[in-house]
Amino acid sequence: MSNTSLKVLTYNIHKGFSATNQRFVLHEIKNLLRYINADIVFLQEVLGERNKSNSRYTGWPNNRQFEFLADQVWHHFAYGKNAIYKSGHHGNAILSKYPFIEWENINVSFLKSASRSLLHGTIQVPGTPQKIHIICVHLGLFGQERERQLSTLTGRINSHVPANEPLIIAGDFNDWRGRAEHFLHHGLGVREVFKITHGTYARTFPSWLPVLSMDRIYYRGLDIVNCNHLHGQPWRRLSDHIPLLAEFRLT
Image (tube, rainbow, N blue to C red; front, side):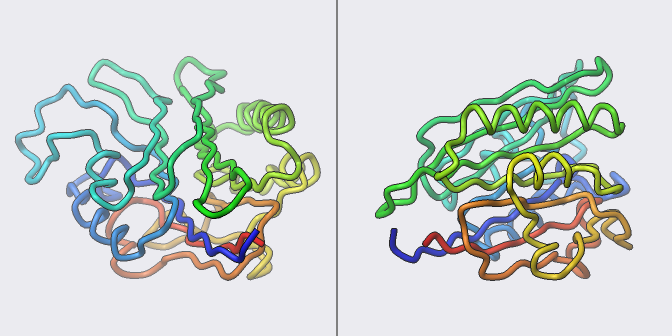
């Protein structure tokens, strides 16, 4: 395989609203994502449908949020519901510059009050022979719930991802206590990119004063080029999370 760079970003966009829910900031998020120009974007809390009147929000898009964000930059995308309610639903989305070979949304909901899912896609970068597996996650708020979801994630990867094919798992793990390491590093042989490059997990929540390590990018079968968390302005005034950005090399 030739040396090919792959830039990825993960971001919980808080349904396109600021951390306090007082401002609709999806247009600002879109402009910043286009500026960063990642090859693959892992998104959480993306509105797939909203039945309430949106007339009070200036600039509310006519299409779904992931389609609005993908516009003319990421020609390929996948969306999986993981929270369904009377006024609509939201979930995970992956935006990609490269076509999907296939994708599937896996339900990992164990509590009726908190629907969750794993969005597993497979892409192939033109000019390279290997598939790359990309999984977008948003895990539950409770420890026992997360453990069961991580166990499901581990089983999914062991059964569907060959050991010789590159893998990226990214998203909001809600794992401020660092318990996911047992499942992901010891169970799958994946490593967390920010921890490898900086010695600790990135603090990504809340955006205005990040103290909790919620958002992660795990990988295997790739080489790290660099990794950063996009703290400070303008990110601190948008979602309640800040994004993680990593660059890999396929070798």
